[in-house]
Amino acid sequence: MRERASYAFAIGSVAAALDIEDGVVREARLALGAVASRPWRARAAEAVLTGAPADGATFAAAADAELAAARPLPDNGYKVTLMRNLVVSVLTELAGSDAR
Image (cartoon, rainbow, N blue to C red; front, side, top):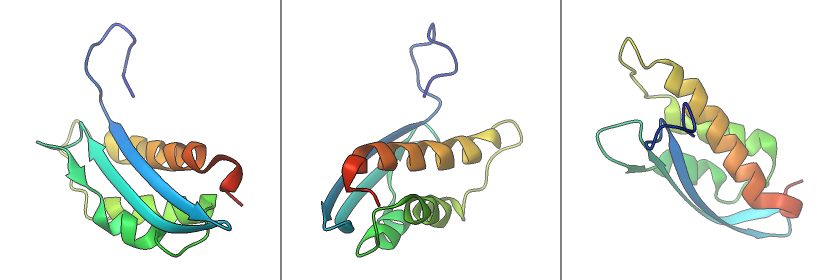
């Protein structure tokens, strides 16, 4: 996600991989970038995803679990909502027709 197409840097990024079988997430890997001093593995989100239905409610719960401890600075609080929406969007797109 970039603020403007003319900018060369992201204001938030998500890298994700899902292994879905019969509509259930068997394995998940998720990393967030451009929202901290370095990219980090979203292990809380991965724990929520693993073994759960591949659907919007699960994706939202995973994003919420990961971002629950976020402590934004005064001028970047918008990134919490941005990242929640971006995580849900990426996981939904990735799940595609496997999502319930």
